[in-house]
Length: 640
Image: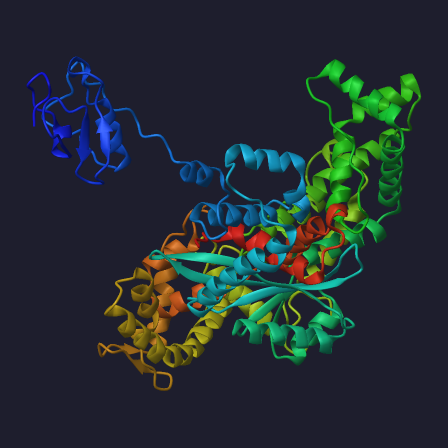
């Protein structure tokens, strides 16, 4: 086929002409005749190109480009159906819509946002700007469909993590009452898990469920057992406060109990603040009164701020304490000592507030110095990475520093002024609550080491922490006693290794054919190499494991230099799991235990924000779901 100019065009592959003078060309595809001009001199192929475009035929690859008289084909105009489709909202099952809805539900849970945000005008405008085709789901859809779906998926992942735990499983629990006067029982899980060939300390929220019964030991134990059954776990121990109902519940249920170190420190300091020294009580009361004067008066607060900005670049605010939390009292005293100059100026020159006499300023400064020891200790044990190994070294460090203050050889003018009875009370109370159990001597109810078992657990944890080892032990006799405790614990661990050996070995075999996962290979190394029979055991390779071998492993471990304080002890034991398999098993089991119940306290802080004035009508089931997701979605690398 040739054009009127005698040149070939790719368009003629799809058209026929009756003759060269025909004004219409017949489409070979649909049979329609398309005009190509009115006269022979005005013939073009523009209409022919456009018609082919409607058939979605690409003639761009033609070896012959259109001539000057042949116009380049324009982009096909969208059909009415296609235009309407581009304006329609995504279906809920559309991948883009599903991804946005998942992100929206997670944002509400993680960032404490009210469910009513989906009804806010500003939020709707934002979403419409970002993706006009996305239809925002209703509150009902989020609470009855999407959030429960995410909740179930996260539950499944946590159950899998618990099932594959490399260590014993520990927990914390507490009870809290919301602004709706609804009680909730919290439960968190703590364990060591394998993560891409490495050991990782995992912390997850298991429950923040409504607790409708009276807070009796029986009901508390029933709730713990119910959660154990729901998650298919058995807690080796729970870290709690000293509440008698909780302590009795764990004792009745034969569940190990670890006292919260932060709670014990709080009781020690509160006791000293309230009972040690009248001058200390008077000073704290007067500081509380001065702070209250500013908190009740905007004009005084403005004057405080104005003076500071005239003399520095920043302005600090006074802090009002909460009498039930000693560290808030410490923060209050510390802040007013920092603002001593400005408080004195406003009192003396402007007369807008009271101030402290010179002796009480000295006492305040001394209190800051003393209480800072306990503040640092509380922060240390409250870290998420803290383990049971910190208890005994920290207790020794506190007593040592208090002794240094009591036996100070500094000149009298440089000593801590006016607080000696207060320091003595702190020292005596710390010694009493952390007294080491002695045979035949009954420990007081409030003692941290309320029995020998908990003391031995803390001792083993400290020694098997490669950052600590025996640094906290004084004297050869005590060292020998601690080493003997570890030896006996290791011997008893042999039977546990045997019980787990077969299942761990089978797990490795089951996974070896389908996966080369480092987690499975490493998990079995602690168990598959050992078989036990009485005190003396024989490994699969024929090497005897006896009490002498355990002594040898302990000696080798203790001779090895301690690692730096900032290092992860689990990384150390990962490297030594083959060299000292029994100690490895003991270490990862004991180092998973948290020293405080702070994780439950933080959980209730989250719940307190979730049940805010904007969300004070949330049902208990939704409070539990949002609290569960708020914490776990941040901790887990969750993928749908």
